[in-house]
Image (cartoon, rainbow, N blue to C red; front, side, top):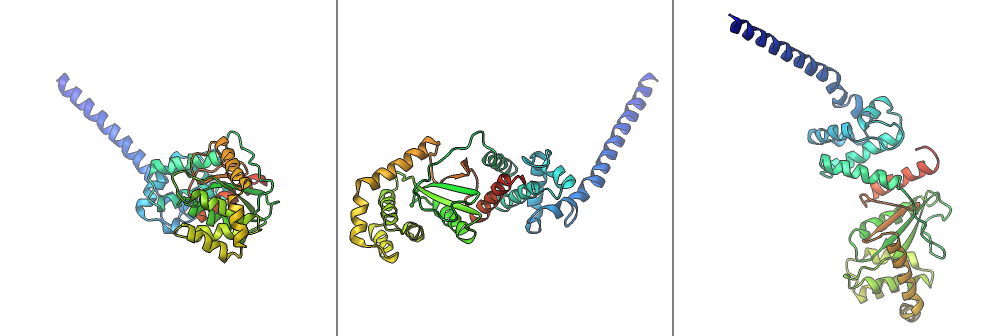
Length: 300
């Protein structure tokens, strides 16, 4: 009889546990799932959400629940989107996560991307590259200054530098770009192309030569000379200047400075002295530069 009663008690206890679990699950479905429903709640606050598929949203739901907004609302991205949807910092961060998800990012990789972005925006200590005497792409008085330590044969530089040039040419008063040579030893045309751009600078054609070199698919000597002709250089003076001692000294000095700032690969990008870690495409670079402007102007 006692065993029978014990069985009844255990069964009753399990029923109560399952009833509680069912109530919790129901509450979750009623309170949480509608918030993430297509076109409603939080998704309506997420830039680019209309391009997301179900698999993307599954990844981002977890990301938004785990990652904290590093500026503005001091909570998770999910809670900030719900409680402070007008906050530009959280909308920008959510849009960044969307772009990473659309590129195939996993929960873990996007969380790391967000950490990298936070460090790019708020590093322990910004550096101060010397830009005196360098030609500027954009207004030197712009509030957002980008210094790029770059190599002409680097495939990542070939994405980042044309993108930054486009930004500073389209919006010259918004951001300014400075280029510093950081030739990579394993690239056979690295030094020849660096001497070419410095020699072009001596004739006032730095950015024209820069753009032509990055537009090339190959950087053989014939390609470099073709650029020199296209941008209108005096070829005899150009060849003399490429071999000049002060040309090589400038390249060494620029790379040495980059190394002192812990640049170990290219492009080494600094936004107002803050080392940038993140995607090198036009949209993400523009987004980071706009974020920096907001930081400088006190909006973030």
